[in-house]
Length: 248
Image (cartoon, rainbow, N blue to C red; front, top):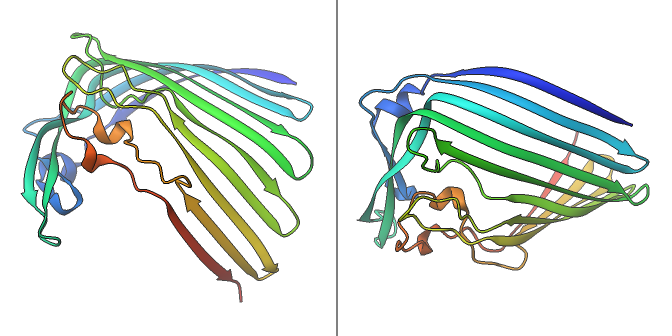
């Protein structure tokens, strides 16, 4: 079976007063937001066309969208400061952001996903997204778009045990403006499992970045200069957690 869908939506977004007009100094977490003198509400129109369906045990969906914005609310990296972390006493980099309006912006994108049920217990899945967004007046890329990225994985669901192995990936981000850094692509593995010891007792395990890969997410480094040191923006390495839940 297969079905087509189309939809249109309008948006109206008022900038949060505390974020837009109050100085937020979170230097201990590596960033701060300085006030904006004047911001207008963001207005948008969204057009979407898609398809979804399945053939036996194979499920699929895909959609393309076109979005236009007036007074687009953007978070701009306006400076990078060097400071001393008051907790560690070590030198640290602090990103300085400011909310700003862009008069007119267009964003186009596509999303797609598939899932295949191998049997009653095992399934495989994958999805991906792609975006392109520019300032209509200057033809500059906007920093809130993301590179081609997605997830893929395999999952097992048994009577008592369930588990997932997930690959998170992103391609190199090349849609950046002149003088801005291109951010390398990456691939990381996560593993999650849950075991039902009794109907009331569950044990859950999660291991993220299984291979302890060093990488930088584009949304954390967007807008940095081409010669900027991005070492302090690397994502966390391997991490593991276990929790036990019991229902009385």
